[in-house]
Amino acid sequence: MARGLFPRAWIKKSFFFQARISFVRVKYLFLTWLTVFVGGWVIYVQYSNYTELCRGHECKNAICDKYRRGIIDGSACSSLCDKDTLYLGRCLSTSPNNQVYTGGWGDVDGVIRCQVGEVLHYELGEEPEPRREAAVFDKPTRGTSVEKFREMVFNHLKSKLGEQANLASLVTQILSVADGNKDGHVSLPEARSAWALLQLDEVLLGLLLQERGHTPRLMGFCGDLYMTERVPYGPLYGVSLPWPLEAWVPSGAQRSMDQWFTPSWPRKAKISMGLLELVEDIFHGNYGSFLMCDLSAGHFGYTDRHDLRLTDPRAIVSEDAFRRTMRTLHCEKDDDCLLGADCRTSCDVAQKRCREEVTQPNLAKACRALRDYLLRGAPSELREELERQLYACMALRGSAGQMDMEHSLILNNLKALLWRQISHTKDS
Image (cartoon, rainbow, N blue to C red; front, side, top):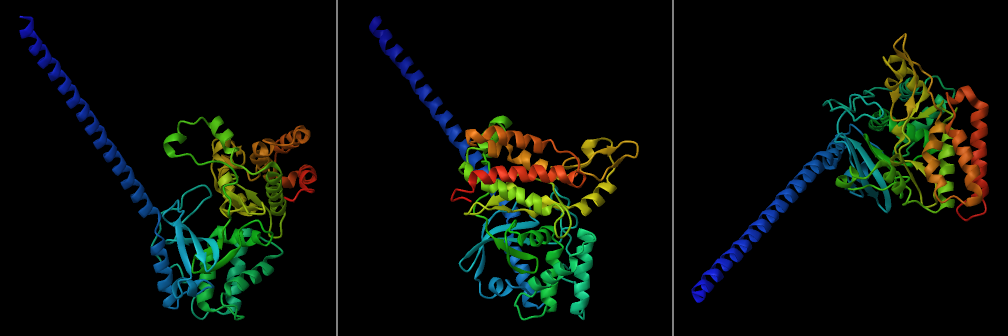
């Protein structure tokens, strides 16, 4: 009897063993299928996003078509369209309308930007609106004299920057840039390219600030496609986490991680000096006062010599333009009176209008951005005084024009403190 039970038990055990193996196989088959499905879906989404965002070939084809038809011209047109010595590299675009690529022009590396279409309206901190198909290069018209074009440029700058004493010299500088082939006069196709570029606030602001070395140098253009020198290191600080991890990392931990990947402290001090000098230069500068409306680390980078560069001039707006914008805004509370991430005013609740004066000057916002950056790794003998000065700086309120003396005193003291620490090092 026992012998009869043994085969039956063995068969039963064998059956369960085989069933378990079959279940494991099915489970792994399902997981493999699920992995392939999810992976394929992610690749498809990424590819779709890439093809939507990265449309550099469309931009180049449209620009070169207009160049060959004699509509536009510029210093980069021949290299882009005839010689193929100016080429687009890796796509960096974050908006379909605003194409951004790494690029090369012979042996020189740079960043190439191009507008795919006409952006109807743009406010700092917003994505450009969908484009309208229209003639972008229709001004100036045929028959326009150089003097008439000079007047057009002057009036455009006046509308952007307000009444400024040095506008005439800025017009001369822009006409010199517009003369792409450096033959001493601006042709109609060159004028059309220059006019299209001037409609882009980031190009105008870049030209205003590049003479002081705050922005990457404009290297060439063709229509509204232009190339600037490459800033080798950016953003100013921080680390980009993969999107699945980003939601799970607390903001405090993220701020700490942002400071891990930074240069040595003396080099950070030199980079910070560059930001303080930028604040100084745009406060009552040659072409009026400007406001820094987004001090995110992603808008800044630095060179091999640790000189700061503002890589996205759209973070800066003229004070005149800011006031005009605030005058048009209706508000219920102070939070409604905001331009970009950092330019705030207060709300006149009785009038339901935003006031024109900013609540915090550029210097206070710059010190807030530099606080963690400078205090981490600071020399022990300097840290207490540096922290005291940074917090005094962050406490500034009102516009810089209302507190000229205090603003200048804090700025000079902070620069002097940093300079004493780095003046004897090779990083200075």
